[in-house]
Image (cartoon, rainbow, N blue to C red; front, side, top):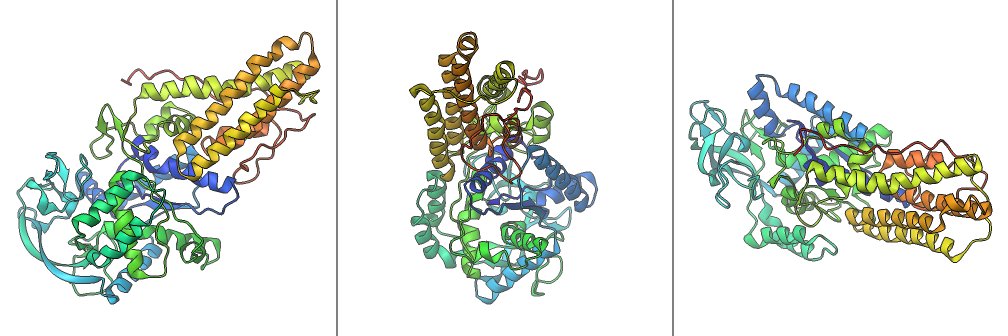
Length: 542
């Protein structure tokens, strides 16, 4: 799994978490649960101009900003229980070397060339302006705060000279066009090959495929991959002179490969990355937001095709946007609850659940804190948490905490188990197709079916007249909980392991197997401790 690289320029918000990072962790955990090897890599993008913009604003060196936010990301991933194989940065010597190797191979193959072009220059600051240092009105949607690289409102990628009424972010001055030399990636070289590849994709989300093919139909434009900046990967040739660097959009996508190579080195097996990148049986899934689609369905595949011998994406299940009060979540514009703010309010697994049940997989989703609270209280606590607590509590009350031996079973007992097994099978199909929201809803349905089984069998009543029947009911319910806890584990890793521990099942593996393991009669259960706490809507939430 290749996961979008967050800019180490500011705190990330719930839109980022729901858009790319949490889906990747769930998918990776599922793959391990069904017995597949999985490698999940990403890291902080330390070369983005948002970093230098913030550093300029604060009067500090860019590395100060990078260190602050990279450490914040790592701490938040740990709290959320993310199962990274490697979360690194694009600031490593390894990443620089891999990027330069890519550059040189494409250059020697004729897919990179040098050109003179006009770019914006701030006469007051006496410097060329990278994309993010230019703001103006989007020519496509009229949004007045568009940046020089992309419009946050309509998601169209831009060139600074496309902007209407451009202005320098440094001084507010109207920038001038001046000639400068740069290296260009010849995307046009790959138009036909990329079109045929995209047309051969099966099972891709419609908005991803349509957006990508739209780019091809409009005609691919060669793109500058260097800028007049001094923060970034050094250009491995001297043709341009001083004050130039490889630009972030080119080196960031190469991070998926460089991180895989770094992981291999850390493992002490330097060539292990080849099993993932040169093995035709290896599948590559890219978890991103929809504003990053063209970089992962056109630009990165073009780089890979130009380099040769490396796997192109298997799927790019890009999520759409999370909006807050109708506005797109944005770190730069301060829209949306930050991940840190949410973790201060909600338990990690509860937050994971509330977001996963609202993943914007096929359309934009507006998330309010009222919706998060409703999902946690009415579904997670009331259905799944309550099921586990009541069954374990009754086993302690009626059988001294030991799993009872079942007596004769009925069709109702078999139906309860079949409902859970069916939920696991159906959810597995959803997760394999990266329909994570549907997978979670299916598992919740399995928990609801088990709750209904308890309501029908009424063990709290049969305990007064028929302990054998009560024991059979609780034994069956514990088997249902075993299967559900294993399947919930990709979504709720910490609490699922807690459930499995409570019912006496081994949790030493990296990810519980995707199966319903039997809870043996006579097993001593752990204490009946509530998995989740009900939450109140914060007073400052609207």
